[in-house]
Amino acid sequence: MLAATTGIPCLHAQDETALRHQFEGRKVTLKIDMPGTADGVNVSPRERLPFDYQAYHKQLEQYGVAIAAGSQAVITKIKVKKNLIEVQLDGGGWGTTSDLISSSANGTSEQAQRELRARGGSRFNLRYAGSIPREALSPDSVKQSLASYIDFSPPTGAAAAAGAIPAVQSDRTQTGPAPVSASWQARVGWDHQIFPSYVIATGNIQPGLLAVADNSVLGDPNGQVAAIVKSPAAGTRVTVTVASGGLMEPTTFDAVLPLAGRSYVVAPTIAWDFAALQRNHQTRPASITVSVAFNGGSASSVVERVTLRSINDCPYYAIIDDGLGHERKQALWWMFAAYVNENHPFNDQLRREALDAGVVRNFTGYQTGDPQEVVRQVYAVWHALQQRGFRYSDITTTAGQSRYVLAQQVRFVDESMKGAQANCVDGSVLFASVLRQVGIDPVLVLIPSHMFVGFYLDRAHKQVFYLETTMLGTADLRPSANPLGLGQQLGSDPSWTTFSQAWETANGEVNQHLSEFNSMNPQYQMIDLQKARAAGILPIAYVP
Image (cartoon, rainbow, N blue to C red):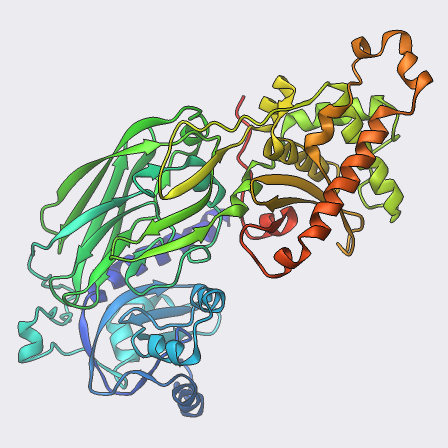
């Protein structure tokens, strides 16, 4: 039973490959107007009424026409899913999740959105009840299902002269487009720098959530390595291969360039060696090979020298060149969340030390529902760090420099614990890591040139208080600093005194800058760790 079940995706993958080979890059003629939406026009070939004209006309009214009846379009992608086959035309249509998020974030006007829809293409969805029948996955079946809406005949006249691809023959053979030569160049990293921390932290983020939606980007919109290609003819197939020994597996990506004369960013989703990236603690040079081939012809290659940054280097602001003559500014403050590691083994050690100190009997997170108990648990962590003799250090040296990327060196939990010193970021990351581990939700508070930590007093996140972690070193609780135990006999508990002072200082700092936080000033940020994890920002794993 297991073997049969696991075989289904493999068969679908084979069918998708065959359909892509037959159709992608082909020019077709539309028999109906196509709406400017990625929702697509639904066709149900096995139903008595395969086409819902009422729903179709509502789409045209709502989204406008992206491809007019009688116009030619390029099939840019075929995707086979559980119960549908997507046939994407001229890019597949505007309105994906990443398009809408980017539009909202950038304040794109309704007029601008209409223009994006008008040139974003469209798609057909061949839908089936349950799962796709095996026989429906043949090229002939797809053509028959769409025959009322698409003319698959080869373009004639000027269109054929422009390099259109001949139609699929009934014997399922295809005459491919002739090899061509075209200009291209490699785009590697940000300012020829690769940040392992960024690659790892964003490894689980859905493509498109961090990048601006752009029909000129084919492949991974967050890709660190790409080829900038000028399309010699509509429907040209391009193959991009990226390789770097010790950093990634050779990765190949095929795409179809929809329009002639337009430049595209073709970016493979790279098979990085994440373990190798995690072990890179020193900035060093590296080489990346980028190869490009057109229409199955011979590939040309370039070797790009890059600076591979240390895993400790956290980029927090970048001016990114897309390779098409445009630059965009990107705030990356959320990257600090990647250095918070709730699963770090040193957290268990510190938690045991906190329990041994007797401030709390156990860590229960929010289970009691009592804010005072939450504060007591946070203080227990503070007290344990002070007993270790933690000191503030403002060292933030990074080996790599760039005019286009701002980065800060951040110590991992074990590095701070072993050295018993931390700067404002290190201390906040360490504190947040332990709080996450004991079930208390922290936030990292970022203001210009400084960071401290906050924590919620309740599970519903209605109340949040803050701590100035740089004040950890203002009290020395080591036995050698308190001869014969006279410190607590002759004065108040220095650990609680510094905790309350850190509480008062940090809360005062937040209240002073409330207007900046509320105005969404990128220099004033509350990095909620629970939200960061929900968005897919991964912690950088501990490597012994």
